[in-house]
Image (cartoon, rainbow over all chains, first blue to last red; front, side, top):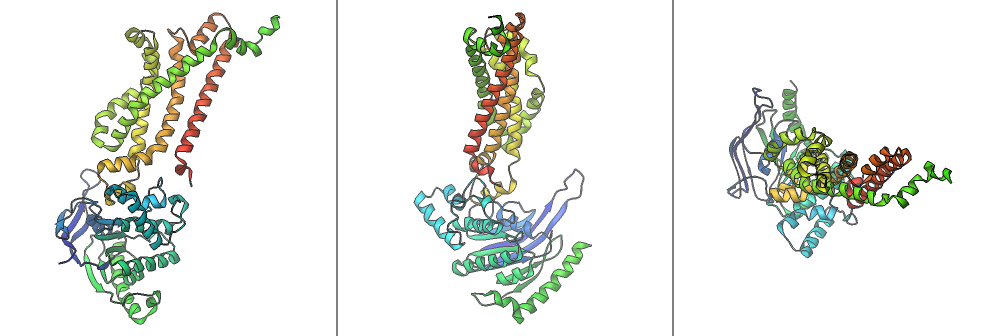
Length: 260
Length: 218
């Protein structure tokens, strides 16, 4: 049985003003995500891929279809689905450690246990020595590392990432990809990762789901079966280049469609 | 010794001979009392209005209307209803502060970053958890700042309240001095109001900076 089951899920937003035409963000899509799978959702800006992620997170309610996690329908947001957003969403009044412990405290875990868990994830994202810093004292890349640690500390069934590295510079983004992939290779969480970066989509995923321009639908699904652990050098291998060329073509058509 | 009654010593004379210290104390107590009374109700109401749209929709029209009613215009009415005692002074300050404060806090709380609220929900918070752990701590520095500003507003109302039907307070001293043509005392009174206002403002600011050091980071 697949862990996450997206069945015929579509989303239409009502018009902003009265009488304005509703916006169809997502045509009914179906997607099965297996346990421990790493799926990237690739598509041009505004194609509804983030909408799909928000639907899985429970932050939006689908207009059609069902989303099942371990067989149970999703009803609102919850701690079983960890989310990392593109914008920096650390709580500015909490330190790095307090941010990572946010969900654990909500669960009512004892202090000592919270400390152990936060210690572990601070180490995993390489932020030892920054435990007592406030978010504003950190760079963008560090803030997103804390956000990843905060989501993972909750031990969710599935990790949802919405262009988490979109606002970072290229060098930092590449390092972050390796960091996240390294964590995944060790922990094997189920991951749904939304991005518009083709390299990122191939490098991270076991399977790349390509979205069409708005209204979004799934245009293609491509396996990215490079062996793990992956090293950044595979990005220049012929197989990687061939896959990238193919996806570039798919996305280009959609980007053109979106631009017109 | 006629020259000693010149204005440079009138302030001293005020405090020593006329028990002006008691007047200042009375005024401070009225401002702080009325302000605290307003804050105790306005802070929770403002938070509830900022957090829940239906509550805002219910109270907002009345509060918005009431905010434009000048508190000083109520003084004659309040004298008739609650007399000229302390209750009347406190009510003037309350009216002057309460509506303003409620609307400011509503605005602050409803301006909470949407993405932080969503992040909290995905981390397992329910509505009460979001209010307690996101809306409140996130809005606290700005609420404290709003309290500081509105306390300043309270200072402008108290003098008006004391000009009419008061037997103590800085405003009362000023009206008395007017009858005696003691302009030096009036000016000293005005300066003291300014100084006490400034001191409370600075204290408030210091406390805010101490409590919410995170919000000062850039």
